[in-house]
Length: 224
Image (cartoon, rainbow, N blue to C red; front, side, top):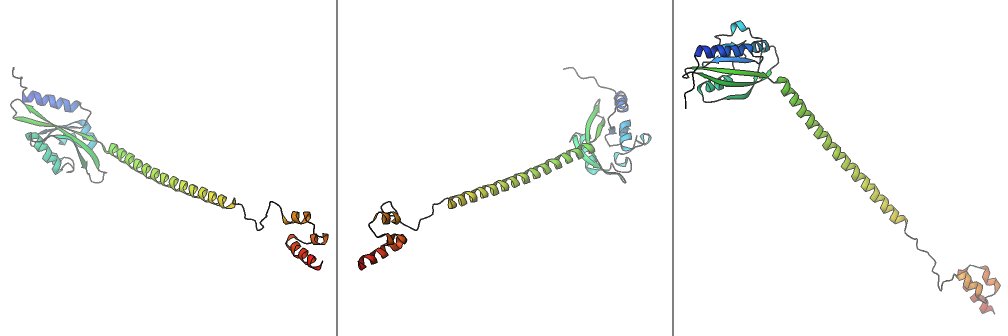
């Protein structure tokens, strides 16, 4: 396999600087020791950095020192030596007198020629608004789930109350529909008054109720 042609470090640097200058994304070009080579205009505008004071400055000294983040610096150093990679690493940038910003950092190692010239291309994306929107969405979903659970609980209680009311009404209907027992027992399918009217008792006996007829009739028979 034919060896790949190597690019002169100066040419590679000029190309990287051209990319940085024309980029609309926040970009940084760092040396292996994390000194700044260049910063894109969009980066300086986004984080209020004076572009004339960028070159040769250590990353941790950028701005008012808000970029002095030990975890980030350690990852960038490990990326420059080839022991790690920075991909979608999220940090909170805290600046005095301003709200914290949520940033996503990516770093790409650039090697020129024999590997003696190593630089890092660092991209920075501000995702603060996106994370706030995601958090609001999650809160709304949680609130909706709580309301739905409460609604289901109330519906279940209402159905239980309705079922209890129907059960009570059915019980009352069953009790009210029972036939009442009669206090008088008829024999031979006829009432005492009918038996008295068909008998040969004297008319005077029929003037009294059936319960007294037999007693009066019996008395009349004795007198006879």
